[in-house]
Amino acid sequence: ETGVTQSPTHLIKTRGQQVTLRCSSQSGHNTVSWYQQALGQGPQFIFQYYREEENGRGNFPPRFSGLQFPNYSSELNVNALELDDSALYLCASSSGAREDTQYFGPGTRLTVL
Amino acid sequence: QQQVKQSPQSLIVQKGGISIINCAYENTAFDYFPWYQQFPGKGPALLIAIRPDVSEKKEGRFTISFNKSAKQFSLHIMDSQPGDSATYFCAARISGSARQLTFGSGTQLTVLP
Image 1 (cartoon, rainbow over the protein chains, first blue to last red):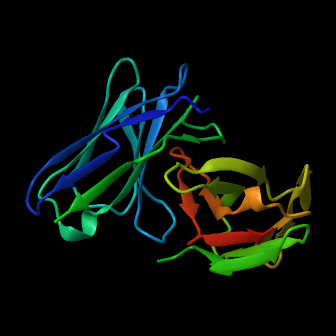
Image 2 (image 1 turned 45 degrees about the horizontal axis):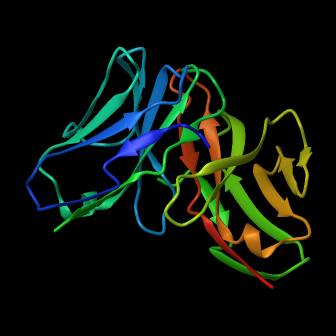
Image 3 (image 1 turned 45 degrees about the vertical axis):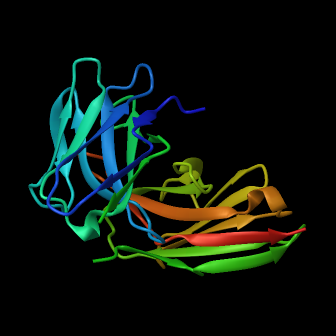
């Protein structure tokens, strides 16, 4: 059991809407990374938060944004949803930005209609 | 641009057989190569990992073979069991502050009883 939790489990939105996904990191972990996993593909890195600041970003547009809170939980916000945003969104936590092992949560399945 | 190429896309093995999954990379800045196992409805879970200064690492029935000159690495699952049926992802981490993982496209392994 990794201890990383995500909510909600599933979500259905329509094109143009905004969505917020939440992640609680494993106890003692101060680093959270977000990944997008399209159906049948490997996860793609969106961004990482370390001690409440963005610490790296993948090739995703600015409408993907995030936050990390003092308790190290995190949110992923996506504005102006597009059909291609339909995917499993994974959160991974680690005990430091330079730590090897990332522990993944079960993900949030987002469907955009 | 896909930086980690994984093959095969799917693999069917008899119980007790050896499962072999291969990955190749281009970016020599990668410094850490983990393999993740993902069951349906779950997030990826770290299986085994290797650094480029080691040519082989074994943990139980799982072995990573690493060929730095060829920029290739592979996962061998010995004595494959039906419970090993899952999707396997290789990944590579580029050196840098974010320690982001770049994943392969995944291999769906089915172990027949």
